Length: 105
Image (cartoon, helix red, strand yellow):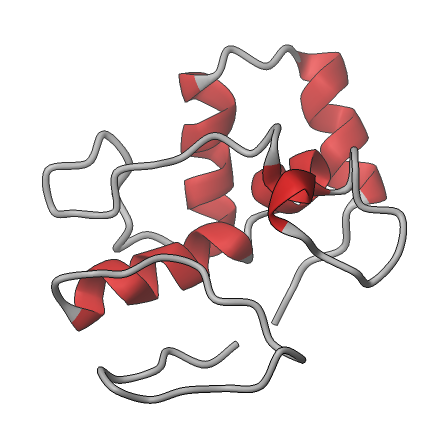
């Protein structure tokens, strides 16, 4: 993933996600995309590498600012745990995600 600076462009080989007021919020989005929680929900509709906006239908939008209910300064695993609690996932659901979704570097 690349966090682009203002006035940078890209080809249609890439997907743009978000428009942020500061680099910290953009980096928090990158952390979110790297969570198992986000990628598990993305995989519900995404069966190929084609990631159209529709494929994000079940991925809840988060607050990426410092006022978020998620502490974005934590590790990706800890962010996953916060998301599991926030959305009330039970042990079976968490176990499924943890065993079927690989960690992302």
